Image (cartoon, rainbow, N blue to C red; front, side):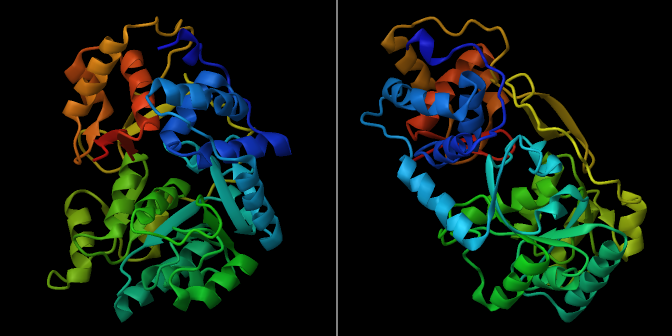
Length: 408
């Protein structure tokens, strides 16, 4: 491995020019570059442009030949499609990027926003729940949404049928944000097309995905982390024991957000997830007053300067041993340390042996990165560098919350 592949961490300056934004988009759209890899590359190289230059050599070191980063023309076509539809590009680190979302460990590097982006400066509450919502569930959602809107909060949800649609419909006038699983120009489900048009006119639609991308099953958990990341609190109105709403709730706990739930009848499957959350410590919600009492009055819109992303500032948030919403923060496992001279060149056989040791400990079930570091009993920085190569090689995938899986 070449010493120059991993230089000392460089302070990151948010994109300020069209060329910078193009490089940002090209990097996150490049093959085998996920969110975690994106930020590791920025921490190592200081800018998206520098990271793009380094990618082919990193790929070669990982055993991937003829690697080509996202072509400039592909990214330019996406930006052109955005301009045609009136969508705004928000890059992590810019002042327009939502500050609460920027603080989560796996914040999207790029968001496409269609509508009133000023809503992102206001405090938000997420309302999520079942697609096959009951009439009582949709009624409760409307009351909660209207009360939160009247109190000054923006309501964020996922533009799904059922609870999501009811939450958006009730807050068109007061402020609503719809986070989409596919491209911001792709409406799913189609029955919400008229509602999506209204949100683009009166509220805001958001997506991290490329234009024209039809949502697939794997995109919905990714969308859910954005919903919870935008919000101060996630309120689950109706949810089955195994549902996407519970994924959003788990994301919220990982991100240090409060989780609240509306109770339901024990024999109603649509209430089983909410009842489980309450059993495990979520705040019970009987009406909007319970939510407002926990939240307090909304703070003034945050007008902070652009976030400076550095390797030292990068943190993972994980739940504390007990209690919803409690988290501990610290350096991301394996994050580069400022002033570290970078690895020395090692024999190829030694690197291959370490790669195999990492892969032997990973499987389809997620494993925490800090647990992997403990198991291997090697410096965190060394493991982080090899994980980056394995990610580019497509052998390892990162999951929300600092977990890793082996790609089979």
